[in-house]
Amino acid sequence: MDFHGIDLNLLVAFDALMSERNVTRAATQVGVSQPAMSAALSRLRKLFGDPLFLRSADGLLPTARARDLSEPIAQALRQIESTLVKKPQFAPEKASLTFKLGLSDYPAFVLLPSLLQALGKKAPGVSLNVYAFNDRDHAVDLLDAGAIDAAIGVPPTHADGRILTRPILRDEFVTIVASDHPAARRGMSMKTYLELSHVLVSPEGELYGIVDQALAQQGKKRKLALTLPQMFAVPTIVARTSMTATVMKRVALHSPVGCRLVLFPPPVALPEVVFDLIWHRRSDSHPAQLWFRGFIAQCASSL
Image 1 (cartoon, helix red, strand yellow):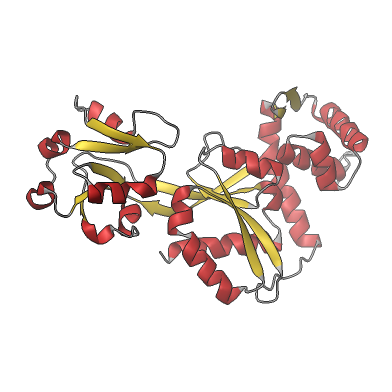
Image 2: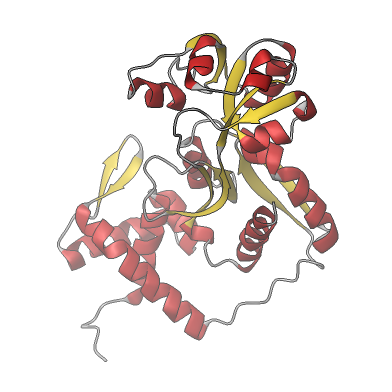
């Protein structure tokens, strides 16, 4: 087999640059100096006849050629690593370490209690540092910076080869009213739905949500009485007022006031909501990280 003089370490450097989008961080990942990584980038550009990475305010942006090369090179390196390097097994029951997990509000409310309970039994020496985020792309920033090991939230807007995702939680929308509300007895027709005052959950402060989009397609509009960023306050508000809201089903079921609510299918078709486990490619094959992600997915599947 003849690689025509290609230094395979250059492919390792390319993979690190693709992962980190920063020469200094890529050098740290590989264990070389920054000048050495810069020299490797120069050699890579000559080897492939392409700039590969362009400098920008957001770091190094891969060219189309770099994106084409990214996955084949990453797969080849993983195959070589699995063949030549025997990784130690991770023993969760003996481990003493802290994982850093980014959570949006929903998985923090729905999944985190079960996850902590299961961790206490399976890996008593493992602790969690939880970081909150609301913007779906903020999770990518935290992963890029190494501030978190993994995140759970809605899929990023612009995920690419360095950010990996796996769907682990699904939920559906329901429309809720207080159990003593007249609509609780007569049902939730479209006519009743449009007559009621609504609560809109909008983390980004927008006055137009997924329900409004679906209604607009039918030439209809609902009456908004309240807009707020926190979804978990909504069931209590609805239980104590004459308002209604359309929220994810587990938000209503897990609420302390869930017994004071009546749930209906929304009178307009709404898509299923999917939450992804999100992680950076740099930690994709790390034994402890592999175990942690698998454990999260297992806990999510039991809900």
